[in-house]
Image (cartoon, rainbow, N blue to C red):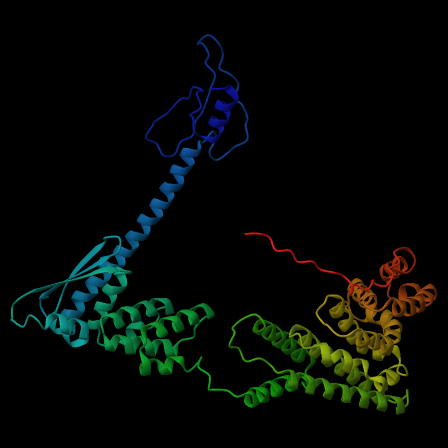
Length: 510
């Protein structure tokens, strides 16, 4: 075998390193191999070598695998010991309960529980208790009615021996509900499953009362619902499921709930609470878009009803602002209301885009000629939030999240592009959340979806404005470059008529 191959196999751990070592043992599972050079007694020992400390120098692959196996074995053994300790505690409790609460002597039933891996636990229990508490044991033990005769019962293939033992202990308890206080939901679910399997009705009722009373995490809720559906306990589990079962809903009732929730957010008086609830509801609605086929979602009609309400409020506020003297103190309050309504409309548009319902809003926004006219007469510092709606739509169109005809896209820009140009400087300065590059990219992409003639009209207009205003205007040079190449370099003629194309069909022998 070539020396290079041998060296590679040594590094990978398949062949032991032939270098002499001070200690070695074939049976060891962990080892640290220390190598040294041979020297005669007359010569001085070699100076100590300083090497970087490594946890397992020269450790082979086999040794690392053995070590990992040893760690896993120790963990399993530790877990088994803890389980045995808890089982022993339950068995002691069983003896105490049988004598103190039931006044019983030694058991007349030898009950053995066997796990899937063969682990066995045996306990001496009483036929009287088992028969009174469990319909399963009552049926099995009724076949032997002679007094003084001991019985042997074995339950095999158990998922969790510890839970079975604890369930038997519960049969001897005088207060099951108190006994479950402090347990976790997963433990009680396991007890419920065993109680249902052996028809321990008091145990089932106590577990269900516990589950009805305690809070659940989301993971626990899934487990509770899954187990209850699996056990089919019918009427007895109704109380537990009340917190998750909804009444049969109609679209009218659902729309009424969503309308109240969304209207409440839009009209909230506390700005901080309004922002927090907007974030929360947006996240919840976004989750609805991906989860559960049977979900009940907010309707398009409700969202557009609220959009129209916000648009009417904006027109009213801007109309009033035109008539208010700039020296009056209530002008500032009115302008704050304008910003608030614009922010509300931005939130609704975000929801429409997420729900893929925003196509109709593009036309609705493009048709707001009166609002656009009023907008141009209001100071920029108060109106720039309105132009963010146009930016939202352009970003969504540029990403392909809104699909509308070319005429609607051009109408949108015809109505609102000048306003966006004029407000762009204030939009950037007033809010850190405004992404300049994102707006410029969305605007560029939207312009490039238009006809070449429409692109030319918009981009030549932008060209002259940009030369005079510079960074105060959005930089859409990329769109300008693409239009230039389309117009002057890569000129495309009309697509030739292919209606005269002939198609010949040939039959090939099979």
